[in-house]
Length: 209
Image (cartoon, rainbow, N blue to C red; front, side, top):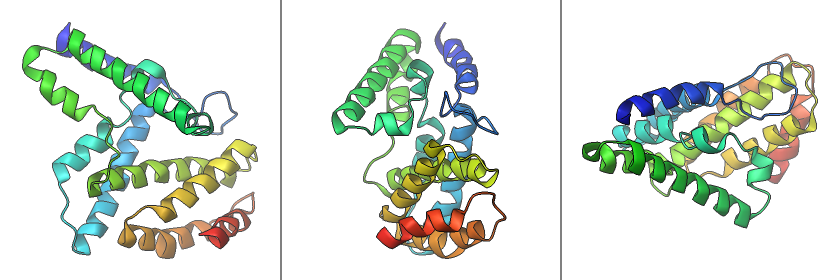
């Protein structure tokens, strides 16, 4: 089956719904999430580059567009569950890595195996591209939860998701990106008309930052 099998698996990413089991005004799937993450990363990598950083754009795009491919095998595990303990997070990462590796070994033609192992591995690391991936990934979590809160979905999971994503974004080691998000984008977010008091939720986090 080879590459055909890989291409068919991409359809499965469209069927995996993020944050399953909760009422949402708008559903989001993993394939769309990966595309949005690549777009966020494009913008913030440009900000970093404009402030003197050197960006490996090829690496950045490979990391962002492929970062959740492993969810083809394990589905979307909600962030509060995944991060409930370091041990569980490590176990989930190990299972996901092993299943991707097994898929590559079983299905991908020999001449592509090395490339696939590199491109489908965990992309969040200490490199600037890895940090941009984490920033962009959390930013999509921020925007997905903000969209629900804006419409009046007061499910505590989305309140928690919004605040935890915001908290993490502000701590990522990308000073120009964090500053732009905090001083420009977040200001625009707070100026939106929302059903829920987003300003209050945001300030609760900002006090701790």
